[in-house]
Image (cartoon, rainbow, N blue to C red; front, side, top):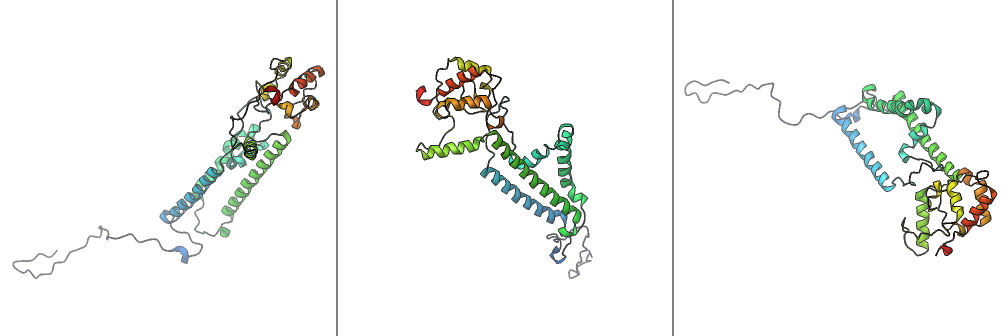
Amino acid sequence: MAHGHGNRSNEKVVYVGDSRIRKPGPRPAPPDYTAFPGKSEAFIPNFLLKEWMAGVVVLVGFLVLTIAEPAPLGYPADPLNGSFIPMPDWYFLFIYQLLKYPYTSEDFIVLGTIGIPGIAFGALLLVPFLDTGKERRFYRRPITSSLMIVSLIASVYLTWVSWHHYTEELEKSGVVPEHIEREEKNKESIESGKGRWIPGKEKTVALVKPDDPAFEIMKKAQCIACHGGELEGGGAPSLRGIGDTLSKDELVDTITNGRANGAMPSFKGTLSEAEIDQVATWLSEQKAEAAE
């Protein structure tokens, strides 16, 4: 600054700017890359902000889907129920199916549970550092695009195979998933004018002649492991009131030869013909009307 001398008040004052002081105002925005097809834009903040927004949209859509279609409740866990088929939530089906193959199970279980998923998610996490090319068009990035397409196809295929195998096993064993059984009972209850069906609130059918020796035979044969300690049902259907559904001859055939491809085992050779006849006779007497 030029200092004045005496009374020379009309002297021009000059200020020298300091280059270390930033000029006030917003910082210049990165250029618009729409004029440069195939070229990358600034990772921070442009690309990162767009990825975050896309991730939020996908996450919200995923949460809405899981709330609208929640995972159905299964039957209570029963280690003695050999007909139970475990099933994870639908978004884990592809990993569930992967663990069924020989090279990702048994001796290679660590590879299937940690190795392959770790490589997949680790590669996805390191993509910004491994793929540093500026090209944005997918057909100009053959390696990255091919890996992504193969991963999507594999996930969809494994999910489809897993669900197809699950439904096939249900048909073979004659098992009805609980959520489907509840829907059917609810529909029947509404159509009969009883309103919505509430689990656990239905009328309980009492056992007819609970002290009959046939019940002791069934206990020794471990029938209660699936049908419940009081034949109220569990992993297998309730036998209370079974006489309203099956005749004695049908019960003899079921006990002797089994049913639903092994879901109900055969007791031929385990029980004598006399014991089978005694059990079938007692079960044929299990009727709702007789219990009242």
